[in-house]
Each structure stands twice: as structure tokens, then as C-alpha cells.
Image 1 (spheres, rainbow, N blue to C red):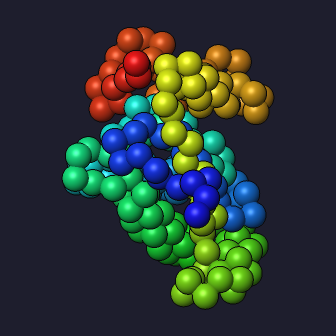
Image 2: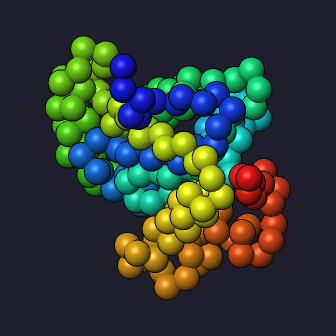
Length: 184
């Protein structure tokens, strides 16, 4: 069996990408961003998720992450995506100010019908595209990619200007819940 897109090292640090179906620009509104950020915090506090770096773009999230001993990173991310999918869809349905509601729900329903594993809607693409960061060089390359993603997209001129990223913690030397881990 191929190891592509698999979590092959339970103690490893991975670069992952979680993308919304149809590349929907859902994370342009605080209500949806906050659902994801609150869920990531919950996973850190209760499911052993360790986030070393992150960025939330308008339609996807990059994480450099690992799991504490006794936790499986793949399962934590599946739980995260399953929970946030339900919360995001509910928030879209119940948001009277959401002008894109019909379009987004139609698209999520279209994707949902393509897989029997969905109830009705699909919010996230199924893959996390985990990439094992097994050297300092690869770690640093993915760290830079993560933090410079908003710059490359043309949203900001410096990584630390993007509010939804760990770039500020890195550029200011703050570690907190997002520790800098340099692999040997």
C-alpha cells in the first residue's frame, strides 16, 4: 500500500493542508474562522494536537503539527474536520446575513452526493495531504511556505501582517501554544 497521503510516523511532525470543497472562500467572515480556530484550540487542549505553525487562508488551512504520545494525528484531524464541517454548515444555514448561502450549500451538497461517506453535505476535501517533516531543512521550507502563503497570495506584504497565522509568534519570538520545534 502506498504511503502517499498517510501518517506513517506516529511521533512525526507533519505539514498538512485542509481545503474546503470547491475552494469556497468561506473563511472571509469571522463567524466561520472562529469555529475553526475554536476547534483547533479544543483539539490542542483535549485531543493531543500540537500545532507548531499554522495559517488560515480564505479556503484552506496549513498546519505544521504533531500529536502527543497516545494520540493519533490522523484521527485528531478527522475529528476536527468532521466537527467543524457540521458547525460550519449549521452556521451557514442559520446566518441571515450570508449572501452566498444558497450557492455554498448547493456546492457542498453536490460534493456530498459524490461520496457515500457523507450524510448530505461535504465541507472539507477528504485528504489532509500529510507530508512528514523529517529534517530541519524540510521543516524550515514548509514553515516558510506556511507563513509566506498570504504574501504569495497577494493579501499582505509581510507574513506577520496576516492575522490568521502563527507568523507573529515566530517573528516576535513568542512560542506559547505554538512551539518552534527544530528537528535534528
